[in-house]
Length: 195
Image (cartoon, rainbow, N blue to C red; front, top):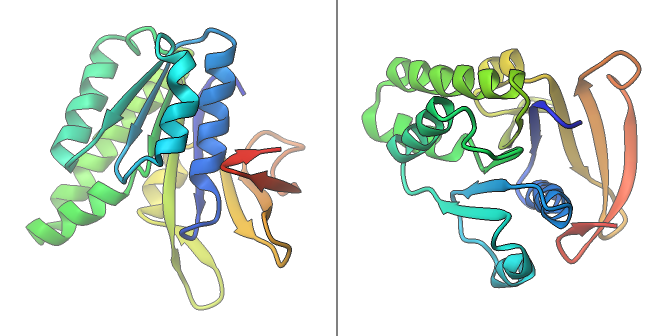
């Protein structure tokens, strides 16, 4: 996938960051510019692994939902600012915090929808946009936070599940092109990367 809006979701510790990091590193190794925006702490080892690619990878620490919106708007206004890959890890975390702080879910939902619309437009113009989202537990399954908005705007949805074997994950393609949708792949994650 070289363009489009990819959603990766799963429970905490499922391997979303490892998958996104692998994508960013792969693009950087090819000399392609990437932006990696993150909301939590970034493991020092990951930062160290990206040092050889500091010309290709821009790291952005997001502190609040307003800052995330400003970054998305800036990227949209600049047509992606030359980045071939734009990744947000974890895209819905600041939305969730903003909703709790303001007690105004309608306003938060509108703002998130605007951000997704702008990112979708970037994706349509050739940028690969990758969003990580935590999952919330339903009675017998999981779904991404803000699922209806994320599902609407995403071209490809990838659910990440832990398996009984250490370091192994199952990827389920819940939405995507014909032939891929419904597919399942099991693969090992090792030291934060896909093997």
